[in-house]
Length: 164
Image (cartoon, rainbow, N blue to C red; front, side):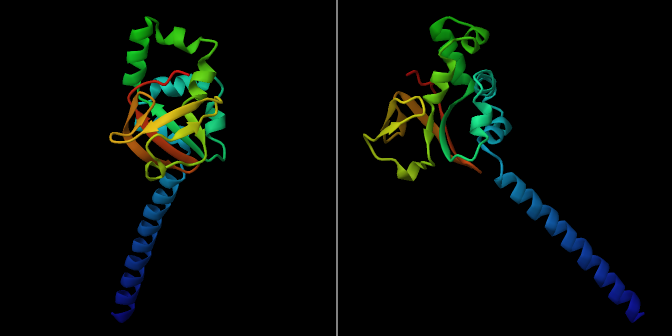
């Protein structure tokens, strides 16, 4: 009888151990997603993801980084398309697409707590963006969701596409 109880406890212990390892593995995997994977999982960056692929920047943003990305939502891109009177395909075929996207990326990891009013930050496009606070803005785009951390940097969701 004692042997059955010991075996029963042992089996329960092993099941609990394997369950907790599964949870820990899921947490570790989730925290190790790069900027591109994190944005794709969010589901509101389909146009941005397509543009990054078209411009050949998806692999760059999967790299070591760290990078800070001001990521326009699909809604922000739709607004831009309407303002410019073009289609998504026309946007993806623009010669300056890569430069537009690089204007949304800053080298290094810059969290919202690092920002200061009037701060100018140089982007990978070689041009600066102006930061203002209360509400947090990058040029004329409002940060609607800050500090989405990824394994190789951070994403700040913005409501407007930045144009250099």
